[in-house]
Amino acid sequence: MSAFRGPSTWLSRPLLGIAVIAAIVLLLEIPVAMIRGVIEDRVATRSEALKEITTTWGGPQSIVGPRLVVPYQIQLDSASGAKEVKGFASFLPASLTIDVDITAQALTRGLFTVPVYQAQVRLQGHFEDPNFRSLGIDEENVYWEQASLVIEVTDPKSVGSGSTMTWGEAPVELLPGTEEAGAEHRGFHGVVHKPSDGIASFNVGIELMGSNAIRFVPFSRNTQVALTSNWNHPSFSGAWLPTQRAVYDEGFTAEWEIPFLGRDYAQEWIGSNNPYDRVLESRFGVNFIAPIDHYRMSERSTKYAPLFLALTFGLLWLFDTLIGVRVHPIQYVLVGTAMCMFYLLELSLSEHIGFIGAYAVAAGSIVILIAAYTKVVLRSIGRGLRVGGALGLLYSYLLALLTLERYALLAGSLGLFLALAAVMYLTRWVDWDRISYPDQVSGPA
Image 1 (cartoon, one colour):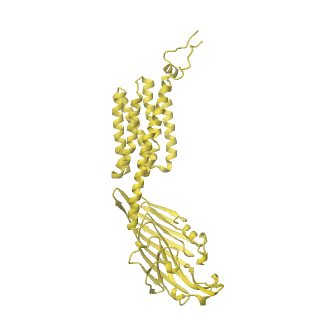
Image 2 (tube, one colour):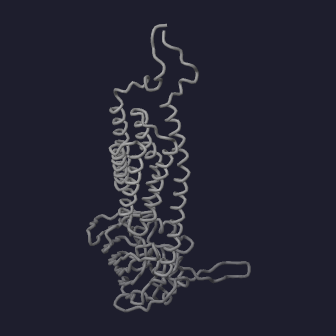
Image 3 (cartoon, one colour):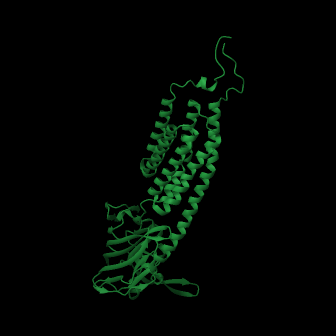
């Protein structure tokens, strides 16, 4: 008959150590949460700085146009008699080719940078003779002398003075604003005449400054866009992706060819049937992104803090349990606090030397600090070096998770499997019952 174990003996020293470690890991989530708050504050500060840059330079730009806007007379019946008001009919080009050459750079404000650009945009194509009857408009009521070719731009103050427009073979004076032409958004326009042969070609050159992104809309039966830039970190987005693209060290090229049937609005409309919600939904283009967003990377790295603390404490617990070198809870707390300091060092250094350099310096500093400390705690240089080596592997593993975002789940799953396999291998011959109850032995009654 085995010796009786009282109700308190089930909580052996190893199990008590695990409970203490779990409590310390939960406790250390408080400083980790505070560091996440610091990251959020820095992101908010960066957003304010970037807003200042984009306000003065120019924000993300969307070019909507060109479209031919022709006023016409509307007669309304009322109790007091007929009343005349002016309406606006919009017509889209039959063909449109957009050529864009963008020179981008990183503009700095304090510690923060934002991609900005100067774009040379060329819009060419032609309009067919507008069909007013399809809109229920009598051509006798059309004010052709007030017709305008309208280009809408998100931030028109960033349009350069070198912008030009031709209608047919004649140059057209560019005028600011679009409200008088019946447009929904800001931009510029030029007064044009009725095409003499029913077809009018146009050629619009726009000098434009902006930041972060540029967008276009498919405003013809056949819309083709060719874009070239020196920025080598593009992110294509919107309703259509490029049909062809190439990214090089010195920049990228992209081409779009938008099918007419793919968009959800007609070639002409009047003000009461304005499809502008669908027009804006059809925008497509490119974002100019930073190579590495160190705030996002820092925030992601803090998500692995509980796992890293548990693995490191588990290694110390194995030394405590298997070798008998006692590790006090205060020593666990000090090691955990040092590991929390890694995230603060990583964040603060990344603002000055970039994420990869900051990560290497922060991780190296923490590994050296903990290895030197555990050398004394575990009473052995070799044990301290093993702890430092294990930490070095953990931080290398974390860097792989952060940089290989596409395979983060796979790498994380494999890493946890290997960690579990290593623990099972190292403890395969351990007599846990003897370690847990050294003063109780089994034997005959």
